[in-house]
Length: 308
Image 1 (cartoon, rainbow, N blue to C red):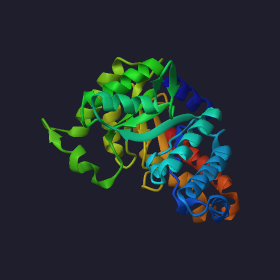
Image 2: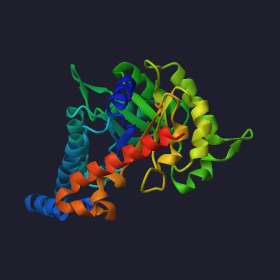
Image 3: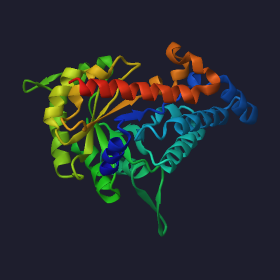
Image 4: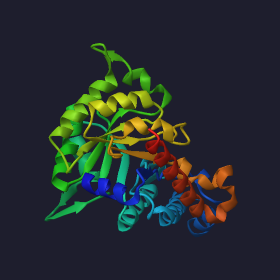
Protein backbone atom coordinates (compact mmCIF):
# COMPACT_ATOMS: atom_id res chain seq x y z
CA UNK A 1 0.00 0.00 0.00
CA UNK A 2 2.94 2.35 0.51
CA UNK A 3 3.67 1.93 -3.20
CA UNK A 4 0.13 3.02 -4.04
CA UNK A 5 0.38 6.02 -1.74
CA UNK A 6 3.64 7.16 -3.34
CA UNK A 7 2.21 6.57 -6.81
CA UNK A 8 -0.91 8.63 -6.08
CA UNK A 9 1.16 11.46 -4.59
CA UNK A 10 3.18 11.58 -7.81
CA UNK A 11 0.01 11.39 -9.91
CA UNK A 12 -1.81 14.23 -8.11
CA UNK A 13 1.25 16.34 -7.32
CA UNK A 14 -0.34 16.87 -3.94
CA UNK A 15 1.34 15.37 -0.85
CA UNK A 16 -1.88 16.07 1.04
CA UNK A 17 -4.19 14.02 3.22
CA UNK A 18 -7.58 15.44 4.14
CA UNK A 19 -8.51 14.76 7.75
CA UNK A 20 -12.15 13.70 7.80
CA UNK A 21 -12.69 14.73 11.43
CA UNK A 22 -16.26 16.05 11.41
CA UNK A 23 -17.82 17.88 14.32
CA UNK A 24 -21.49 18.80 14.22
CA UNK A 25 -20.42 22.45 14.45
CA UNK A 26 -18.69 22.09 11.05
CA UNK A 27 -21.80 20.77 9.31
CA UNK A 28 -24.07 23.25 7.46
CA UNK A 29 -27.56 23.71 8.78
CA UNK A 30 -29.27 22.29 5.70
CA UNK A 31 -27.59 18.91 6.21
CA UNK A 32 -28.34 18.83 9.94
CA UNK A 33 -31.97 19.77 9.33
CA UNK A 34 -32.45 17.01 6.76
CA UNK A 35 -30.76 14.34 8.89
CA UNK A 36 -32.67 15.30 12.02
CA UNK A 37 -35.97 15.34 10.12
CA UNK A 38 -35.37 11.73 9.12
CA UNK A 39 -33.78 10.33 12.30
CA UNK A 40 -34.55 12.91 14.99
CA UNK A 41 -32.03 14.68 17.16
CA UNK A 42 -30.46 11.36 18.02
CA UNK A 43 -27.12 9.59 17.65
CA UNK A 44 -28.46 8.17 14.40
CA UNK A 45 -29.36 11.64 13.19
CA UNK A 46 -25.90 12.94 14.01
CA UNK A 47 -24.25 9.99 12.26
CA UNK A 48 -26.36 10.53 9.14
CA UNK A 49 -25.39 14.21 9.05
CA UNK A 50 -21.70 13.27 9.34
CA UNK A 51 -22.00 10.76 6.52
CA UNK A 52 -23.75 13.22 4.18
CA UNK A 53 -21.19 15.92 5.03
CA UNK A 54 -18.25 13.59 4.39
CA UNK A 55 -19.65 12.36 1.09
CA UNK A 56 -20.07 15.87 -0.30
CA UNK A 57 -16.54 16.83 0.65
CA UNK A 58 -15.04 13.64 -0.78
CA UNK A 59 -16.92 14.14 -4.05
CA UNK A 60 -15.38 17.59 -4.37
CA UNK A 61 -11.75 16.75 -3.55
CA UNK A 62 -11.18 13.10 -4.50
CA UNK A 63 -9.54 13.96 -7.82
CA UNK A 64 -7.09 16.37 -6.18
CA UNK A 65 -5.55 14.36 -3.35
CA UNK A 66 -4.13 10.88 -2.78
CA UNK A 67 -5.50 10.12 0.69
CA UNK A 68 -7.93 10.84 3.50
CA UNK A 69 -7.55 10.36 7.25
CA UNK A 70 -10.74 9.85 9.25
CA UNK A 71 -10.15 10.27 13.00
CA UNK A 72 -12.18 7.55 14.66
CA UNK A 73 -12.90 9.49 17.87
CA UNK A 74 -15.07 11.94 15.95
CA UNK A 75 -17.27 8.98 15.03
CA UNK A 76 -17.04 6.99 18.27
CA UNK A 77 -18.56 9.89 20.19
CA UNK A 78 -21.85 9.02 18.48
CA UNK A 79 -21.65 5.37 19.53
CA UNK A 80 -22.50 2.48 17.24
CA UNK A 81 -24.25 4.82 14.79
CA UNK A 82 -21.09 6.87 14.56
CA UNK A 83 -18.95 3.80 13.90
CA UNK A 84 -21.32 2.87 11.08
CA UNK A 85 -20.74 6.34 9.60
CA UNK A 86 -16.99 5.71 9.93
CA UNK A 87 -17.37 2.39 8.12
CA UNK A 88 -19.45 3.98 5.33
CA UNK A 89 -16.90 6.77 4.97
CA UNK A 90 -13.98 4.35 4.66
CA UNK A 91 -15.80 2.25 2.06
CA UNK A 92 -16.85 5.29 0.03
CA UNK A 93 -13.35 6.73 0.00
CA UNK A 94 -11.93 3.43 -1.19
CA UNK A 95 -14.54 3.33 -3.96
CA UNK A 96 -13.12 6.71 -5.02
CA UNK A 97 -9.65 5.10 -5.09
CA UNK A 98 -8.40 7.19 -2.19
CA UNK A 99 -5.85 5.74 0.23
CA UNK A 100 -7.48 5.62 3.68
CA UNK A 101 -5.39 6.27 6.78
CA UNK A 102 -7.36 5.24 9.84
CA UNK A 103 -6.37 7.67 12.58
CA UNK A 104 -7.03 5.24 15.42
CA UNK A 105 -3.85 5.69 17.54
CA UNK A 106 -4.05 2.17 18.89
CA UNK A 107 -1.43 0.95 21.33
CA UNK A 108 -1.63 -2.21 23.42
CA UNK A 109 0.14 -5.56 23.59
CA UNK A 110 -0.24 -9.20 22.65
CA UNK A 111 -3.64 -10.46 21.60
CA UNK A 112 -5.23 -7.05 22.22
CA UNK A 113 -2.86 -5.33 19.78
CA UNK A 114 -3.41 -8.17 17.31
CA UNK A 115 -7.18 -7.66 17.59
CA UNK A 116 -6.86 -3.93 16.94
CA UNK A 117 -4.68 -4.69 13.91
CA UNK A 118 -7.19 -7.20 12.60
CA UNK A 119 -10.09 -4.77 13.08
CA UNK A 120 -8.51 -1.93 11.16
CA UNK A 121 -6.08 -3.49 8.71
CA UNK A 122 -6.63 -7.23 8.62
CA UNK A 123 -9.30 -9.88 8.71
CA UNK A 124 -11.08 -11.88 11.40
CA UNK A 125 -12.01 -15.53 11.16
CA UNK A 126 -15.76 -16.20 11.39
CA UNK A 127 -16.42 -19.88 10.90
CA UNK A 128 -15.03 -20.79 7.51
CA UNK A 129 -14.76 -17.15 6.42
CA UNK A 130 -12.04 -14.50 6.67
CA UNK A 131 -13.73 -11.10 6.83
CA UNK A 132 -12.46 -7.51 6.87
CA UNK A 133 -14.05 -5.17 9.39
CA UNK A 134 -13.12 -1.50 8.89
CA UNK A 135 -10.44 -2.28 6.27
CA UNK A 136 -8.38 0.92 6.21
CA UNK A 137 -5.13 0.98 4.23
CA UNK A 138 -2.99 2.45 7.02
CA UNK A 139 -3.47 2.94 10.75
CA UNK A 140 -1.80 5.23 13.26
CA UNK A 141 -0.12 3.40 16.13
CA UNK A 142 1.07 4.55 19.56
CA UNK A 143 4.50 2.99 20.23
CA UNK A 144 4.85 3.73 23.93
CA UNK A 145 4.24 0.12 24.99
CA UNK A 146 7.25 -0.86 22.91
CA UNK A 147 7.69 -3.45 20.19
CA UNK A 148 5.01 -5.67 21.74
CA UNK A 149 2.44 -3.11 20.68
CA UNK A 150 3.78 -2.47 17.18
CA UNK A 151 4.81 -5.87 15.86
CA UNK A 152 1.25 -7.31 15.71
CA UNK A 153 0.41 -4.44 13.35
CA UNK A 154 3.51 -5.08 11.26
CA UNK A 155 2.57 -8.76 10.97
CA UNK A 156 -0.86 -7.86 9.62
CA UNK A 157 0.71 -5.30 7.28
CA UNK A 158 2.90 -8.05 5.84
CA UNK A 159 -0.11 -10.28 5.28
CA UNK A 160 -2.35 -7.59 3.81
CA UNK A 161 0.25 -5.34 2.13
CA UNK A 162 -0.84 -2.38 4.22
CA UNK A 163 0.97 0.13 6.43
CA UNK A 164 1.20 2.01 9.71
CA UNK A 165 2.24 5.46 10.90
CA UNK A 166 3.91 5.37 14.31
CA UNK A 167 3.55 8.39 16.62
CA UNK A 168 7.05 9.86 16.97
CA UNK A 169 6.67 13.60 17.66
CA UNK A 170 3.11 14.86 17.80
CA UNK A 171 1.94 18.39 16.99
CA UNK A 172 0.20 19.27 20.27
CA UNK A 173 1.86 21.84 22.61
CA UNK A 174 2.22 19.48 25.59
CA UNK A 175 3.84 16.67 23.57
CA UNK A 176 7.21 17.70 24.97
CA UNK A 177 6.21 16.70 28.51
CA UNK A 178 7.19 13.15 27.59
CA UNK A 179 8.45 13.11 24.00
CA UNK A 180 11.21 15.68 24.59
CA UNK A 181 12.58 14.08 27.78
CA UNK A 182 16.26 13.32 27.50
CA UNK A 183 17.24 9.66 27.52
CA UNK A 184 20.99 9.01 27.36
CA UNK A 185 21.42 12.66 26.40
CA UNK A 186 18.94 12.60 23.50
CA UNK A 187 15.21 13.34 23.35
CA UNK A 188 12.88 10.38 23.54
CA UNK A 189 11.39 11.11 20.12
CA UNK A 190 14.78 10.47 18.50
CA UNK A 191 14.94 7.04 20.11
CA UNK A 192 11.43 6.29 18.85
CA UNK A 193 12.47 7.48 15.38
CA UNK A 194 15.37 5.05 15.43
CA UNK A 195 12.99 2.20 16.26
CA UNK A 196 10.74 3.22 13.37
CA UNK A 197 13.74 3.11 11.04
CA UNK A 198 14.72 -0.30 12.45
CA UNK A 199 11.23 -1.76 12.03
CA UNK A 200 10.91 -0.22 8.60
CA UNK A 201 14.22 -1.52 7.26
CA UNK A 202 12.80 -5.03 7.41
CA UNK A 203 9.52 -4.08 5.75
CA UNK A 204 10.16 -2.11 2.58
CA UNK A 205 8.05 -1.21 -0.41
CA UNK A 206 9.74 -0.24 -3.66
CA UNK A 207 11.39 2.89 -2.27
CA UNK A 208 9.81 3.57 1.12
CA UNK A 209 8.92 1.43 4.10
CA UNK A 210 5.36 0.66 5.02
CA UNK A 211 6.31 1.58 8.61
CA UNK A 212 5.92 5.35 8.60
CA UNK A 213 6.00 8.04 11.28
CA UNK A 214 3.84 10.88 12.58
CA UNK A 215 5.81 14.11 13.11
CA UNK A 216 4.00 17.41 13.68
CA UNK A 217 4.38 20.37 11.32
CA UNK A 218 4.62 22.60 14.38
CA UNK A 219 8.15 21.30 15.05
CA UNK A 220 10.06 21.83 11.77
CA UNK A 221 13.56 21.68 13.30
CA UNK A 222 12.76 18.38 14.97
CA UNK A 223 11.38 17.21 11.65
CA UNK A 224 14.72 17.98 10.03
CA UNK A 225 16.52 15.73 12.50
CA UNK A 226 13.95 12.95 12.25
CA UNK A 227 14.04 13.01 8.43
CA UNK A 228 17.73 12.05 8.68
CA UNK A 229 17.08 9.38 11.29
CA UNK A 230 14.26 7.82 9.24
CA UNK A 231 15.28 8.28 5.57
CA UNK A 232 13.01 5.52 4.26
CA UNK A 233 9.98 6.22 6.45
CA UNK A 234 7.07 8.17 5.01
CA UNK A 235 6.23 10.96 7.43
CA UNK A 236 2.62 11.88 8.12
CA UNK A 237 2.67 15.55 9.11
CA UNK A 238 -0.28 16.88 11.15
CA UNK A 239 -0.57 20.46 12.34
CA UNK A 240 -0.88 22.31 9.02
CA UNK A 241 -3.30 25.21 8.93
CA UNK A 242 -5.51 25.36 12.01
CA UNK A 243 -2.68 24.31 14.35
CA UNK A 244 -0.28 26.89 12.90
CA UNK A 245 1.85 24.94 10.44
CA UNK A 246 2.40 26.40 6.96
CA UNK A 247 4.15 25.38 3.77
CA UNK A 248 7.46 26.95 4.71
CA UNK A 249 7.59 24.78 7.83
CA UNK A 250 7.34 21.58 5.81
CA UNK A 251 10.41 21.51 3.59
CA UNK A 252 12.58 19.51 6.01
CA UNK A 253 10.04 16.71 6.19
CA UNK A 254 10.57 15.90 2.50
CA UNK A 255 13.49 14.15 0.88
CA UNK A 256 15.37 15.67 -2.05
CA UNK A 257 13.13 13.74 -4.45
CA UNK A 258 10.15 15.79 -3.22
CA UNK A 259 8.68 12.67 -1.64
CA UNK A 260 8.79 11.18 1.83
CA UNK A 261 6.05 13.20 3.51
CA UNK A 262 2.29 13.67 3.35
CA UNK A 263 0.71 16.66 5.08
CA UNK A 264 -2.61 16.52 6.89
CA UNK A 265 -5.18 19.28 7.13
CA UNK A 266 -8.49 18.65 8.83
CA UNK A 267 -10.46 21.75 9.83
CA UNK A 268 -8.63 23.77 7.19
CA UNK A 269 -10.25 21.64 4.50
CA UNK A 270 -13.53 20.26 5.82
CA UNK A 271 -14.58 23.46 7.60
CA UNK A 272 -13.18 25.81 4.96
CA UNK A 273 -16.65 27.22 4.25
CA UNK A 274 -16.61 28.77 7.75
CA UNK A 275 -13.42 30.71 7.04
CA UNK A 276 -13.62 34.31 5.85
CA UNK A 277 -11.30 33.47 2.96
CA UNK A 278 -13.82 31.02 1.51
CA UNK A 279 -16.97 32.76 2.72
CA UNK A 280 -18.08 33.47 -0.84
CA UNK A 281 -19.05 29.83 -1.27
CA UNK A 282 -21.53 29.89 1.59
CA UNK A 283 -22.98 26.93 3.44
CA UNK A 284 -24.79 25.68 0.32
CA UNK A 285 -21.48 25.11 -1.48
CA UNK A 286 -19.31 23.92 1.40
CA UNK A 287 -17.83 21.16 -0.73
CA UNK A 288 -16.57 23.69 -3.26
CA UNK A 289 -14.99 25.66 -0.42
CA UNK A 290 -13.13 22.51 0.62
CA UNK A 291 -11.91 22.07 -2.94
CA UNK A 292 -10.61 25.64 -3.03
CA UNK A 293 -8.82 25.08 0.29
CA UNK A 294 -7.11 21.96 -1.08
CA UNK A 295 -5.95 23.85 -4.18
CA UNK A 296 -4.54 26.65 -2.02
CA UNK A 297 -2.77 24.14 0.24
CA UNK A 298 -1.32 22.34 -2.76
CA UNK A 299 0.05 25.63 -4.13
CA UNK A 300 1.49 26.63 -0.74
CA UNK A 301 3.37 23.34 -0.34
CA UNK A 302 4.60 23.35 -3.95
CA UNK A 303 5.92 26.91 -3.58
CA UNK A 304 7.73 26.00 -0.37
CA UNK A 305 9.35 22.93 -1.91
CA UNK A 306 10.43 24.84 -5.02
CA UNK A 307 12.02 27.55 -2.92
CA UNK A 308 14.07 25.37 -0.62
